[in-house]
Image (cartoon, rainbow, N blue to C red; front, side, top):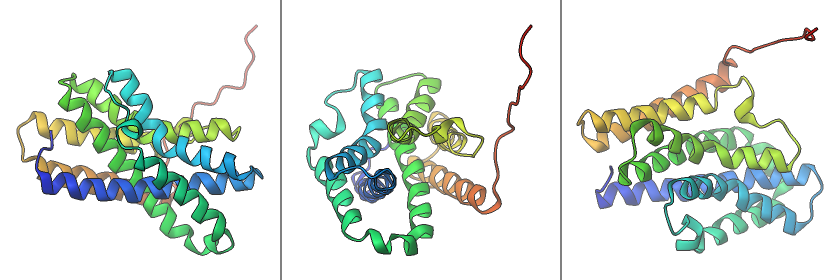
Length: 213
């Protein structure tokens, strides 16, 4: 478990940046469906904070992140409103948002795993907590937008979260330096996600088209 104050502070800064980026991507998704401002802000909050909330409920970890730190609601809401204001220029930032989305995925995964480690959960639960933190917010966004969740597509997304969480949890269990394990997990997850986007890597698909008699 990460306990070093400096490392935790740096991780928290990345978390806030990733949280804002996730909220902005959700706001754009809301805009494509012509939602009103309340809908845009709600979708941004659900996307940014939903994964952590589900994780905390499942692990009985209280208070929820946004209940303990209500300022997180201001971060997501503010990012959503900013997106509305600069929407006409957002297409120029597509590559930046893809990168920030990847950062969000790995940072959320590490934070979720770290919380589960602090609760003395088994390693499989730690990895699952990381995946939930990294992916469930996007699942909730896609469901509310009536899309097939990215988690359920062949694209390397949940797989990246699982690998990131596994490296972080496994390295800690093996007794390696926590800061080194954190750096390795984040770097591996980020590189894997960006390479998947660059080269269209995906998991094998299961295709079944025959009806049962």
